[in-house]
Length: 257
Image (cartoon, rainbow, N blue to C red; front, side, top):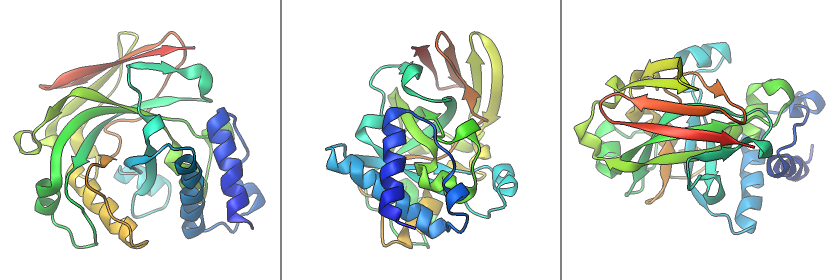
């Protein structure tokens, strides 16, 4: 099993928006550790194209999703500059089967590292919190995969957008923020920040713990998408999503071909 070769194939499909069969169809023995190495190698190819890494994303931060995947911790992926949308428009023709989910984005201004961080360590290192939308788009056929497959696919990372307003971390009870998603004016999902590991701050702590196994850290200036507040919603050209963060703001995303 050549991890560099698999990473090159994964990168090609990510860039072309072209679906592929699961890696585990050919390599059923693929481990989680090998999958994270494939992820890293594929993102190294982004860096080689002068597309710098700007942060991290967390996945499987819902306890129910962890149970469904038979895991006891989340997964993480890497974010690069080209993944951030500058305008609230998503060109779905470049993607395979895109889905959108509401998130919070923590902006870190002090290095976070290690397995023993406390919530206050995260708060002290958080410059601000943005409302965010993440677009996920598994490269695998029918959006079906095993745990190593999705990790190798950079946790289905595709695009994300941040709101224009930054919020002081201490001024909002982020676990109590209600989020409602409207698709073409009709409510399709709702949930609370507590869906993210009971409180979004725990997601940042968990990320620092997990990447510390590879002697990595959350660097100053990086963004952390902490995980979905609701289930993801499928979108196609012509759709409009409005996401209401109760008491805070509303984010809108328009889908075009």
